[in-house]
Structure formats: structure tokens, C-alpha cells
Length: 122
Image 1 (cartoon, rainbow, N blue to C red):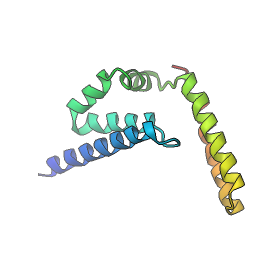
Image 2: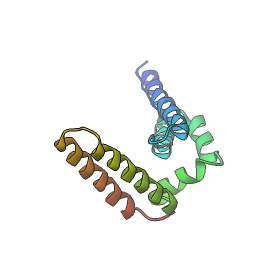
Image 3: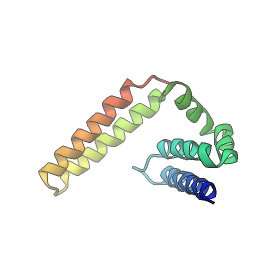
Image 4: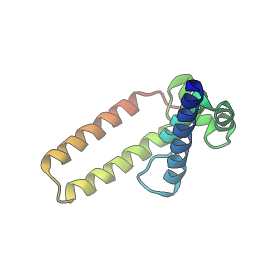
């Protein structure tokens, strides 16, 4: 019984992550690939058929395999992510928000950008 509940939890996480990844295709600002990577990871723990489907998918499969093998991120994706983060930061700094929130988010996004550019190019 416990094993079945754990497998169900992994499947739910995989489906939720995949759904968010699909929504991210159409919704600017919501990333797709991180959610698909999370879906593949969760599926590998509770839904091997979904994991195999994601790994064989013509669009997402190569990105998942590159991430698993070398933790690599395509250079184009790095540039796009930095551009989106820059636009988000500009909007945020123009919005009436507390200065502490603006500084905090800026620090977090700078950390994400630094981490991302330290990953190998795919």
C-alpha cells in the first residue's frame, strides 16, 4: 500500500510538472525546460513509461539527455533566459514595489544567471 502511494505521488509530480511545462510554451515568463526536466526526473521514480516517452520525445528528449549526461544548457537558452530575466527586472524596477523586494529578486536572478552560465554549453 505504501509503495503504491509513493508511486502515485511521483506520478502526480510528473504530471503537474509536465502540465506546467506545456503551459510554459504558451505563457511568456513561465519556463518550459525546467518543468520538463522535473517531470522526467519524477517519472523516472514512479512512471517509467512516461520517462521513456519524454526521453524519446523529438523536442524535449535531447535537452533531457544533455542535462542528465553533462548538466549542459544550450547557449541559445542561456541568452534567452538572461533576456527574459532582464525584461522582468526592468518591469519590476519600474513597478511600485518595496525596495527590499526589488533588491532581493535582483540578487536571486543574478545568482541564477551566474549559475546558468557556469553550466557547460550543449
